[in-house]
Length: 128
Image 1 (cartoon, rainbow, N blue to C red):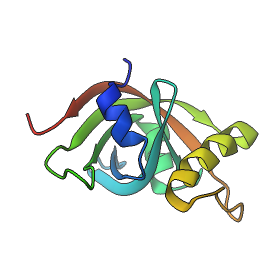
Image 2: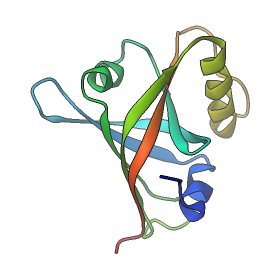
Image 3: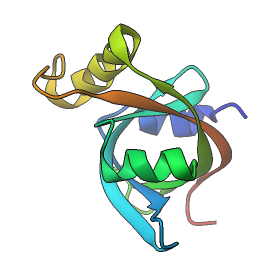
């Protein structure tokens, strides 16, 4: 599924998204993440052994919500699954592109990072 243009416009800004995954016991786990797009997929960065990465390797389903700061009454709701993990130089290229939105430059290299690429199965803009 392609990401709608109006949703892509929100994702292209420095908005904080909330990513929900499933813990091993079946309960939800939600954390804020930096997010962007990579082609027709969503992209976020994480440590390869983070709780969210471990959750997603076991169960790739995700739910993501965010609210544009300029219009908190028009939330973006997304659901999908991790279709690919990107590491190494290719991963750092995506990490740096996302980081530039948030901190104005490349991400520090003091910790290992990987990128999860999410195939969107459901998308909605607004409360309706």
